[in-house]
Length: 605
Ligand code: M6R
View 1: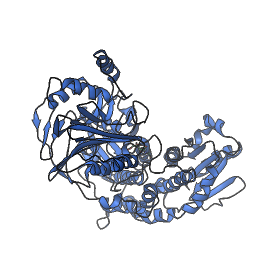
View 2: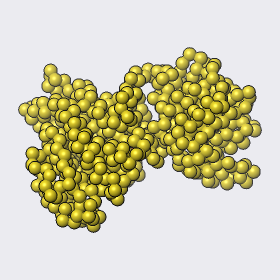
View 3: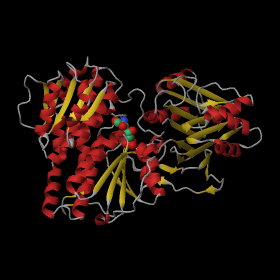
């Protein structure tokens, strides 16, 4: 992960570097640092912890160079401390890095034999010392090319040089890197979001590319050192949505934005006049599709799991789902009649992007369902279905998950209709039921105070379980993931029917067990599984849309969400599990938007 920024300008750059690093903190927040060139010297400032700390250091001791690089770190090699914070500088060169150098130990040994001294435990420092060595005989560009040839692994780099005070060199292999253009100023950044407050003109480096920036020019080279041109994109303007307004944190804002997320998504894809879905240009004719393969990581994977149930229910298409980090290494039989769908909020997740590349190499058709439409995954896929959720800043994915489910459901309906798997009447009826979804989400959000009370049941808990069947099984997994991620409390998500095959052994007196039980064909079965938990002392927290009396001597706490439709239940039942994780984390005083050890965009393997 990690975020990098570089600015070449005709005025001091450190304030803009700090502002951009604040935007990049979603990529990592273990430590931060910057280096600028002042009086023919590399001036490096670093801290452990957040960018705020770096800002304090700069306040006391400003760094006023006109060219500089900055970094926020998500630790891979070496603990998060000042020594391991980036940039990593020698006397003559300074480097920021996102990614992992897989052969760093081997390179380090070779450099040590030649007398090099390492100050940190990072893999990045080998890059600094290799370039330093190469600069003895070569110019900066040649030294970087020479160094890159020796590296295995993934990287995005920003490099400045003491003796070439006008240039920043950027390079990319595996990890994303963008260039931004402005008057008398050019930029390097891990993504366009970090550059948006300074410019809306962006180019993206492809794998193997290198760029040389000055304040007035940008040159691009491919890995064969050939000069190349890059397309310049104009970014859309969504600055207004990346502010937390009156909310305590981004996560609560994003949870409460979900009626709007649903509305935007529905408006984009559903033509209410024609009573049809605006999805065209399928990369494979719907009737020709043999199988759909859905791929994602974490929460995005859970939306794939929900979609599997929808596709199986409404279409005759076979569906397979996979976690991207597994998919990319499986021995797969690719089929040109399969549609491979990649789901990702950021569109930059390394494993998902690599799984997509694998499909492209095998010449099969790809579709991406993404929030960030300017992302690598969106740019690299044959067909893009945006989720229109607006920037999601909280590390825990909430509104993007809801948007992913909605787009997947809409795609499923369109395919079902286009293949004649459902008739006109059912199609229109299902579309119609969908219209009330934003309002139902709004009503569901009103249960917040009940969830707040439910959250108290977790204060002394040693762990917890989330149970559901059918559409509620992926929501149980998502509930457990959210709780782990935000409150650091151990949580397991299980299909309720699977308990007796092992996990029941975990149930002991007072263990909180969240039972997700919509009024569907599984309802009675879920209640039976719940009885098995009650018999062993589990503390039941029950979430349903059934009219049934909620509280009895066995159910410690009950919450009712509005009933819409069985097919849409996973979308509505997502709200209580998000609110629950949020309120448990709040009670435990956890950092809601930046949970420990995590990052928003996972750009390493
Ligand atoms: O950006 P992506 O949707 O590809 O990210 C995938 C996961 O890293 C992400 O969903 C992660 O699991 C969330 N932090 C969960 O809240």
